[in-house]
Image (tube, rainbow, N blue to C red):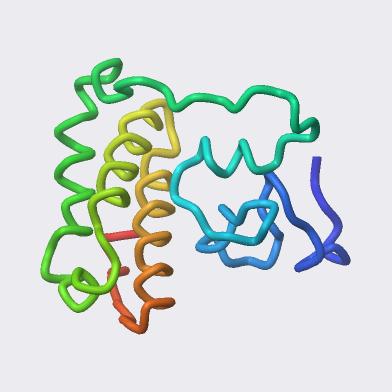
Length: 140
């Protein structure tokens, strides 16, 4: 299914807001930007009495061949590239989410999962006043 361009910037929910900016697609129902997919999904429950979804356990254990690749690429979050941001936004949850998401996306879309998580950290850094230029011709 495709959405007509007339809806650009007028949507919200599980498919993002269709504004062309993937950095803000994980906005909750209350418009809070989150990193964890499960937090994002739970915020969009239709019935409040439905139980919250739980995070999957050890996705890198399920796809161990992806773990080294994920660690290597996600290390950009802990690197000097984001040094200006480290004192403003704790990188731990973003790094952990990056590794987990990148391990999980092993059947295609791994770069998109990686890039989306790093972009979320960059967006949080930007909101905290630390503008980071992290994309390169070889990274996302």
